[in-house]
Image (cartoon, rainbow, N blue to C red; front, top):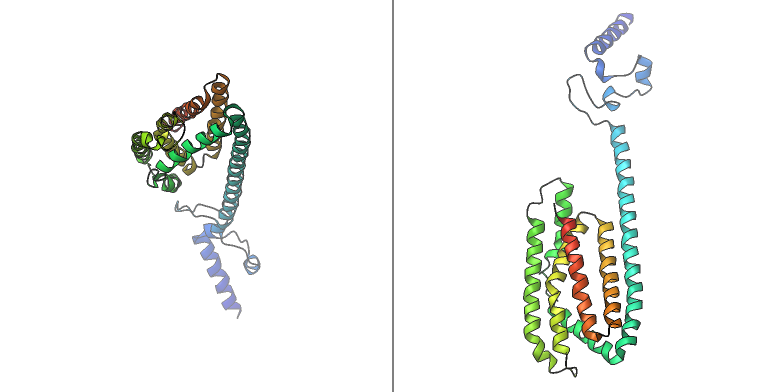
Length: 265
């Protein structure tokens, strides 16, 4: 029995001498108490092979979860802020517009917006809807996005131009049914910003896919606030509904240019 015990201890010492890097246990009693193998506490071996330690994986996972929660919280906060600001601007602009152009003028303006929206229903055929997912996957996997961004932007502007031409050609016929002499002109002014609107939708999709929620929210706030400011200026100058319609393409053009610079590589 003593001989068997001595051979067991001898084999254990030999094993420790050959593979010392795998155990941090100092005695047989420590092994019995549940001492863990060496590769659970380090990330390298004698042979230079990187080993992911379980403790380190848990720490990294915990840190990643906290970072992800923080990004979600910050993104949600920015989105909520832009939504609140948009609602406030809407509550200010509508009564202001009615005060300057009256109920009838407001109805004509709303009709022009509704008609233009009908020509925008097709949008960019859903490209901007799937673009955030594509961009997020590409950046998450550290892949080159290639020409996805530029191609989607060009396609959006192209489809917007088609919708714009269709609205311009249809505006005289639609204007015949509206008792407002400048209604076709309102539609034509509105059609100018349609390619820009489609392009902005594509650029917004890039920001969403890249989780640039701050830039996205600031852009939407800038668009709404600049539109309100220009509308007030034109109304104060006595431009009426024509001025209100001109304010929208101007603010859209400014934002489109800023987004192009922001997304430029």
